[in-house]
Figure 1: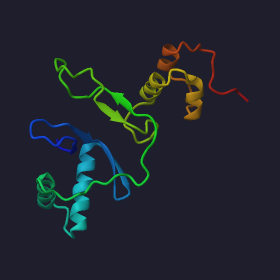
Figure 2 (figure 1 turned 180 degrees about the vertical axis):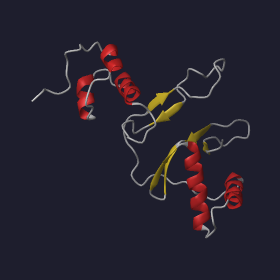
Figure 3 (figure 1 turned 30 degrees about the horizontal axis):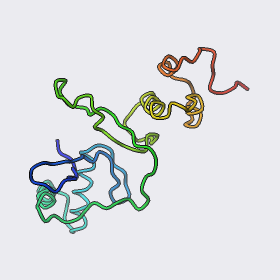
Figure 4 (figure 1 turned 90 degrees about the vertical axis):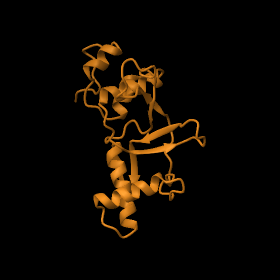
Length: 166
């Protein structure tokens, strides 16, 4: 597949890397490692005055993999603040010793573009904030109803409503 990895180690004996799965490139937000990679390569081509052809993208990918590669990643002007959420990494074989470890980390849980269902977002949030009232969390994030799985998990009766009828 391919994507953009950041190597966090400076040793030739090991590598500690993470894959960027969402990023802002030239003011546009991209979700998925392929879209991030393509947007980054397109931006490199554009800044060099080149067409983003397959060949030009590949040349830029080769340059970015070189030992003395140009700096193309920059910190956000306004970094995200708040909690970091963790999920199991997808795509690992069941027998892999890391299959159950929380190897996918992200912030901005309530972003509408995050490719994750609302129930999973609620469960992740409540797992990290067990002291909060799940009904208030649903209201804060403008849910229109209480999902069945959330009712079951938090033992919310069928007569409980998020909002009072007018």
